[in-house]
Length: 439
Ligand code: B12
Ligand code: SF4
Image: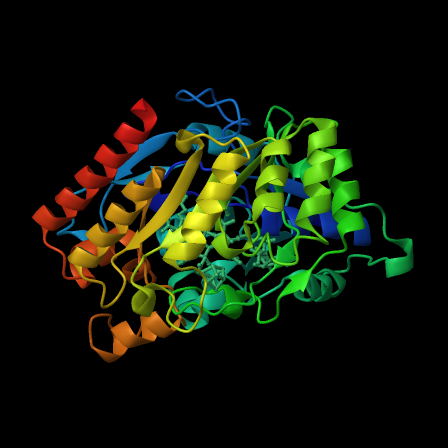
């Protein structure tokens, strides 16, 4: 049985490869190889290292995607930005597609609910080549928007949540042989990364013990679960033979740090690795010991989760961070040897009920810390308390439309900031960042 694991193109107003790697699909493909006799094929038009040479890259796994401006869907008409498809040029995709043998099962992931157009486009292309194949869609879209996933994407199966059990069933039904767990072969998700890709995505835990009103963590992983650190250490040792940059995909990397992160940081220091935490770190967990460990481990991208100083808005229902915790963390990081330009913090804006004055107050606070602010555009994530609040007040339509969960759609259409106010916030953020970099 021939199975194709497929990553769809991105369709959006902007997209940057900030270590976008389809980790869930990589894990599934590795698992199918280890547990079945199926032949596994892989097609990922977002892999910049497997496609034609593109625009400038950073050397650590980040970079610009190839981009083609495309027709804007109707509901984005009034948004004054180009809309584009990101990923390999179509000729590259089509020639890789044509080189595949006959495929029996197509397994496509989805990485953002609002990249639905790209998912439909990609699956239609592949299906036209293999019309007899069974098609399965999994990942974020069918998990957070199961009804809309069925409505928007023509596939035989839409799978919510983890995909392993469902794939096993489909493989058995299709005549594939499944090995018992005791006869499983070693699984290596890293084999689906290009050999030239310097970055390895790493997951040490699933979910998060907190419950912020804007975040889908609990919906995706109802329980917080942690991997045995010995297993993670084995994975890192193995992957470090071919890669130096390790990028954490955890929601809650520093929770129970004594058992998970700190041993990993010691290993990273020993192996001379470079670590990246593009997902914001929990600020309360950064004490002096953790700050020293982060520095010794070669952490190159360090982003903190401040989000907002308006405690009643940003962290409704959780006590993720406050000003004092933020100050302590930044002080500890400076003492450990990080410079101001090394430290970035997310400032979330566009949250339901968040005034523009409150965004400025948060930026003022970041300025006093002397580190770099990074605006994170709030997008309403389906199923979260804030998303439901927006639906109740009529700001978001029912039934849901995945495109309306786009961050720019929200900023321009659902949230009440004016164009001038938004420009002022962006300028202020740029000014603070520039003055930190200059000092
Ligand atoms: C790591 C991460 C990032 C990374 C990298 C993203 C990437 N995929 O490469 C970075 C930091 C870049 C990032 C950025 C953003 N992210 Co993000 N990110 C995540 C995070 C924490 C983990 C995703 C992940 O890879 N998990 C690991 C894998 C192993 O797990 P998994 O996907 O669950 O895989 C299983 C199942 O999904 C299933 N499955 C998957 N594929 C398939 C396929 C088939 C066929 C089947 C059957 C099953 C199946 O089986 C898998 C194995 O069990 C999620 C939250 C979360 N906990 O999932 C948010 C999340 C996906 N991000 C989110 C958001 C909002 C963003 C940002 C827009 C934030 C912002 N405002 O800037 C940006 C924009 C990204 C962009 N490029 O434009 C939202 C999604 C919102 C949405 N509407 O879809 C999430 C859910 C977080 C949240 N707080 O709610 N993100
Ligand atoms: S702390 Fe972060 S990952 Fe956890 S629920 Fe809040 S936003 Fe989500």
